[in-house]
Image (cartoon, rainbow, N blue to C red; front, side, top):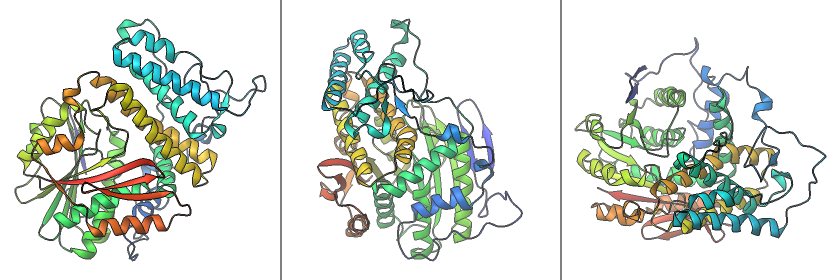
Amino acid sequence: GELAASSSSFTLTSPGLRPPTHAASTPPPPPWLDDADHHHDNAFLHWVINDHHHPLLDLDDVDLDYAKPAPFFFADRGLHHHHPASSSFPNPKPTADDNTSTVEQLVQAAKLTEAGDVLAARHILARPAINYRLPASAAPPLLRSALYFKDALRRALISDDDSSSSSTPPPPLHEPHPHDLLLKLTSYKSFSDLSPLLHFAHFTCVQAVLDELAPSASCIHLLDFDIGVGEQWASLMHDLAHRHPGVALKVTALNVTASSSSHHPLQLQLIHDTLSTFAADLSVPFRFAAFNLDATDLTPLLAVAAATDAIAVHLPVGSVHATAVPSVLHLVRRLGAKLVVSVDRGCDRGELPFAAHLLQALRSTVSLLESLDAMGTDSDVAAKIERFWVQPKIQECVRAAVGVGGDKTAASAWRATLASAGFVPVQVSSMAEAQAESLLKKLPVRGFRLERRAGSLFLHWQRGELASVSAWRC
């Protein structure tokens, strides 16, 4: 591959079928190549982390102390991860009053933010919700979620208007570290092992692409506004190799300024190398590229697609700032894309008033953490998942909501936005629904359920919505 960087964009491409060689010996074929089951995401992640031996994921120098989860919340100073436990502080179990106090403070601060009284909102967010150090493992999902949102809102308000306060912005959740990518990947894999949410989102999107494009395409080109770690497209490769041999695949990862989704170049390099290796083992013609785009000028994207490409766009709700969505959808139509697939995590409701938006996001996060607790998740594993996956998602959501502020003209309901731009909803296929039902039947606990509504497929934990997937023809 070749990496060319500039101030505005960079491109990472695979010039041929075979990926760059990082070792003298060819890596063994991924273990799921002969597996008839459709869900290969976890096996791909296991292979990337444990078997592929990529130099970016060298474990020899990992600081295990750094990788340990945070032992305590400090409710009066936000969430910190570097203070040891101390016997000088009492350590009682959290009570219902703690839950109520924390949620009430969050609601009050959100309403004040909505009204434009940022200073009063900051004052409330600075109050201690609880007066003792609380072990993360002892806190119920509601309290954990409320503390995460309270901290995220405090940070977002300081970042949004630091000129109105002389206080020093709080430090990040943890300082940047060379092994963040590895810790993020291992936490991501743990989450994928435990929760059906990622599998549900990935294979439902993949099935929509297969249904709409694979039967007639010679080359499928995916424009991805939130590629994650790329494992969903490994699953697509597997299906192309076994059901539609000869179909080529291009994946273009897009980072748009003013978007919530961004990826470090090392992460993109890892995605490039591992997907290229996997494609070569499957004999699927494959190319990968990555671009940084300015939200005010997306036209350079017009040059990335060939006339013969069957273009599909992966555009999760919230992956692009609300103000840039109309421009993105206009560009998608100019590109001649055939399909848009979208994942809604249940916490992106930009059309709602600010306080209602945050409460909806809080409910969705509580449902997610309740489902993880019900799966019997080890407390250390749960803390790492929340630190490296849940908390960043909450911060993205809150930052985006604060950024929109009272401008609801830029944040209409997602389905209405797509429909008004001329996109037509595609009914979820019976195959996608059957796969989701099969996934839930394999889980060790009951409580997850599916709902088919308005052509989309929804995943719930009990009465709380976790995610939905929709597809749209252009």
